[in-house]
Image 1: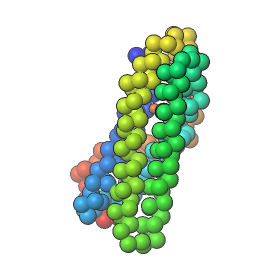
Image 2: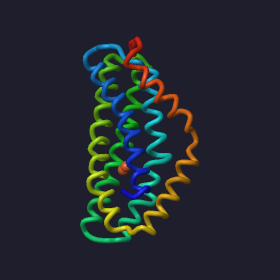
Image 3: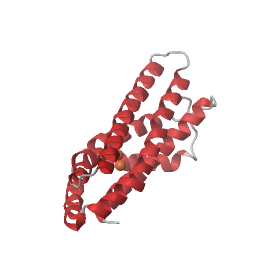
Image 4: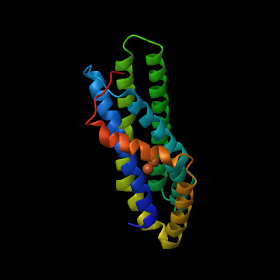
Length: 187
Ligand SMILES: [Fe+2]
Ligand SMILES: [Fe+2]
């Protein structure tokens, strides 16, 4: 796979790691077991930053338009569906933030509502990542040509370098790694 597409796949692996945290937290909350509230909130905040500030910029501003330039009915439908997925996940992430606010305000069943909101976010996002890997990236490798893919690689590198909070990801990785072994205060 071209390095530009590997860059996007690497973002996906990072996103999946955060989704693992969200999924585990949702399962714990639904079973009325304690979770680490700050790890969960940091995971959601980092995921939003990565998607809107980095990964989705690469796709929405550069990859998708490049695919549409090599226009066909199949690509139009595919990109339309992938863009709609982004809208759905953005909406789901706002619901997660709203559920956190209701929990902070002491609403009864707040933990359960957070779990439901998390599930409505991580499940469709996992399917979206899979669809991109299987369809969009494979298509890009076939139709874009080396010159365009090289341009995308340079642009993606510039977007990565311009990220505002690279340290927060490093801190999150460390917390995710040790989280399974630590005590988990109740949310
Ligand atoms: Fe995407
Ligand atoms: Fe993606």
